[in-house]
Amino acid sequence: MSRDTSLVSADWAEKSLGADGIVFVEVDEDTTAYAAGHIPGAVKLDWKLDLQDPVRRDFVNRAQFEELLSARGIGNDDTVVLYGGNNNWFAAYAYWYFSLYGHRDVKLLDGGRKKWELDNRPLSTEAVDRPRTSYTAQDQDSSIRAFRDEVVSAIGAKNLVDVRSPDEYAGRLLAPAHLPQEQAQRAGHIPTALSVPWSKAANEDGTFKSDDELRTLYGEAGLDGSKATIAYCRIGERSSHTWFVLRELLGHGDVKNYDGSWTEYGSLVGVPVALGDEPGEA
Amino acid sequence: MTLGPLGCTPPDQAAPVPSHVDLAKETVITGIVTAGSGEPVEGAYVRLLDASGEFAAEVVTSPAGQFRFFAAPGTWTVRALSRQGNGDTSVTADRGVNEVALTVAS
Image 1 (cartoon, rainbow over the protein chains, first blue to last red):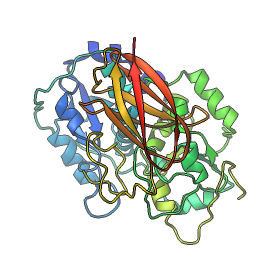
Image 2: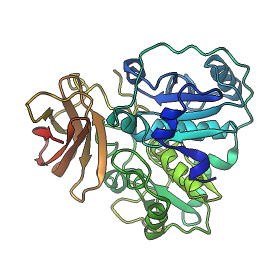
Image 3: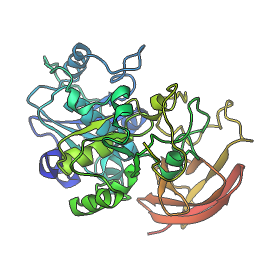
């Protein structure tokens, strides 16, 4: 994987509007953004309603994913271009999710909704209705998704990358600072996890930094390129952003996203937790 | 809007602080983004940076230009990007509600 195959620029996207075989998909948790104006022709995925099981804390299953994409008019051979708000957090999450279910050609729009808006590019409020398809998904690719037991075993053995803000990592905050801080789980981070906030991989307009800048970032943070890596955050969307950087832009081979992330780990009984700005001991 | 533990999208920036949020415990940094002419800027991207300049959070302003963060006591920078230009300001926040004014210019 590389930048050329996984990322498209806003210029490319604007020139490709309406092209056959390219489907723009806006992914947000707050779907009022889509209703207020979306990239012309883009369909909508609701991060919570469409991609999460309504009862258990897990993803929709393969059959539900097939039904979702069929209903949205997305075919197996379509190039899916994902974008969204929150600096593409949820779009990156959807990218990882589409990869998990084996979609062949999926790309992320560099800068997402923010750059598109700041550039004054066209937005539309017209309803989008694509003809239904018959989408076939693959079994989940377990090589890119980490579960809790694997994360606990990775302490001191694999790269763990905590991509939350420094204050969340240290345990001074429990959630990103646009959210109230009352949470049930303990504060802190997984011992030995490196702190590399997702935001260090992005420019302030939401675009990704250059490959050279990204290599320097993770190199200086102490990421060992010879080891497997697991990225986590609070609920798995910011870490999808970093998973995308490491695996899709920089081409690291074994990178998993831990979607349980801190809301799971920080609530587990009996696991080690480190406080403060240092990674801590295994 | 609900703020469940799995939610991550910034709440509506114009909505009142939800009743379950204890303002005695929270450090709220809030204000209005205005352009040089004094008019509120809707849809500005406002980011909160910590004392080291590191990104902490980002929200999009309401139609009245409002933004709100839940931070911690200390020194922060609030920076706005918008089609009308960019701007930033520093704030030393204490527990409770901290009001800041933020203007953008191109």
